[in-house]
Length: 314
Image 1 (cartoon, helix red, strand yellow):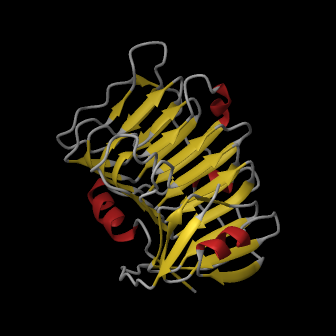
Image 2 (image 1 turned 90 degrees about the vertical axis):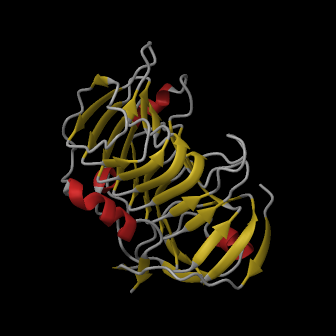
Image 3 (image 1 turned 90 degrees about the horizontal axis):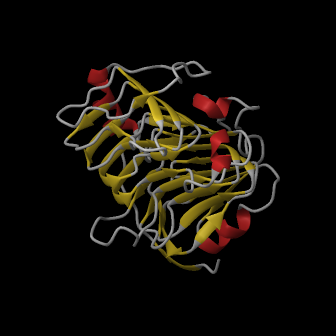
């Protein structure tokens, strides 16, 4: 895809609450399985400051760690990451109009990135890939345009093998279609998807938070605020939805009443004034990894304080 770019010095003050290392590996959820997810840990570390440099740097399969320098990179198109890559945003860095892609690859870490207003595309798009950790990202657009002006905040689709993907400690806001998992009703390869969505913050979203087809999904420790539609389970998807909080929202967990229905086990959630879950109970009751569940009274404050671009690098 053709990329165009302009660079401007723009510094954004953010709350720094967590120290992280360039060589960190995934330590939570499904991407600790299937051999683990280490990204570019142990590889060379490079700082990039332009869209052209970033696009060139992240190709190939050699272990590599690339950081986006403070400031704003504005452009169009998508930057596709190669295998064994960690893409880490420094505090105050941002991508505007430019999405991140992970296609036909494995072992990728994306952390501390701020991505906004990708017209006609996804903020982060993962297809045909495995072992991907998306952590402490901030993806947003606006709700001033039609449903399809921006595409998804994050899309995880076309999984052809065991896929250990997840989004943790991330913020999704001001978006129409947020998180899509499973391309459409005919993509049965998505049955192999295994995905953790934990410690996230969804704010001012119209729909798909997430919408999931097929596959197995664990959603916990998440704060949902000001949502029309929240979690939708379809096409036989199995979900475990536990220890989440909703405020100022309409729907919580739902499915269809036809042969496209999905399933969910829901427990220890606070739905506030939103509608109670409307779905068929599933069979996924225990995640195959250790889980730290927060108390319901601390989930909102934890999400608001910790989710999004809140890492500083040691």
